[in-house]
Image (spheres, rainbow, N blue to C red):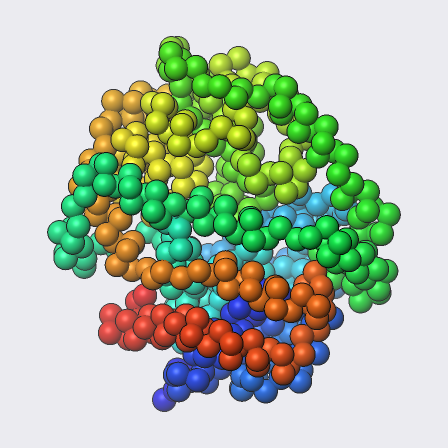
Length: 503
């Protein structure tokens, strides 16, 4: 009997290509649940590149206005042990980050019920063996993923590791790997701390991000053209019906994207933030997370208030230490945070705000300890012989010099304990070897940027319609890359069968 694969496809199109090459290389029945903008639906309705047994369109089945049944939602939570409010709070459009619209409880619950019923229907009708999905970054993809896990449906999720250009196909992002069956990993490489630092430089995630940012720079005229097309689209009735676009008007959107606030916020940062590190001062380092991002919303939903986290760390410090808080350089993209946000941090007596231009390596070398919510800085600290405390489940918490804090009231005691903790180089080697064994090298973001450049005239700002023939030519041009990605997914299917259906 053929395996059945359910594909979750959305506005990031690379997974369409992955699904196509899996179908070419693996005899399976393939189904699709598609979350696509109305302007792009024509492609799926006319394409024959992938032969889906059945296709559903997510946006045809959801509503924020239908009366909801609280008893159904309660029974859903109890049946699957899924906290629906936690799912909802992780949606940036529902809470905290939406500048255009405030959703009511009734609208959120109505949407959740229609989504739960839709996903239950799809899974009941397909009964898939595998879910093919990109790294979840929305409440609906997260809900589908969690539901599949509860039903024992294995996930094929391509996920970045903590190292640049290293990816894996896992059941979840940055999953805690079971090393009990990896007896050969420990002896597969024993680097010194100096050699490990060289490895980190060669496999730096920041290096990959820097290249992505440089390639993502769009000429000003093309940027204006895309922006004007988007503003024009806002007037369409079909645009307004999708919940993520509620409250948007041309006037509001134009006002939000004015660059004035970025300029005066940056002036405040340049004036108030520290650019030179005091060599004599003892400090503990906390890097701010970019917002909004899945690292907070999905991985650490109870720590999304970073000012509260900073305050709790600051009140837990030994008296001779300061807390250095560095702004994330990528916040430039959103026009930085509000000045009032920075002022609240500056009000805390023993906290220093560090300018985003200061190199993280300099801070890692001079700090005594790193505290992070779920960021890669906690892992990088170990490479610099420094211990770390993390507030969420991360794969590198398996390293003995990384402490996973479960109770915030224990933070003062844990900080003092970790300040005297030494890095075990053997543990770090084991983690590195484990990741290298279970991942593969790939320029995934490069492929994504190539896609954007290839369809720039057809698919301005992600709101256009892709010609089917042009998609076929793109997949043919990048045949080697897509085939590699497909084979990595198929490898995981084979592994799951060999291990008793456990990826």
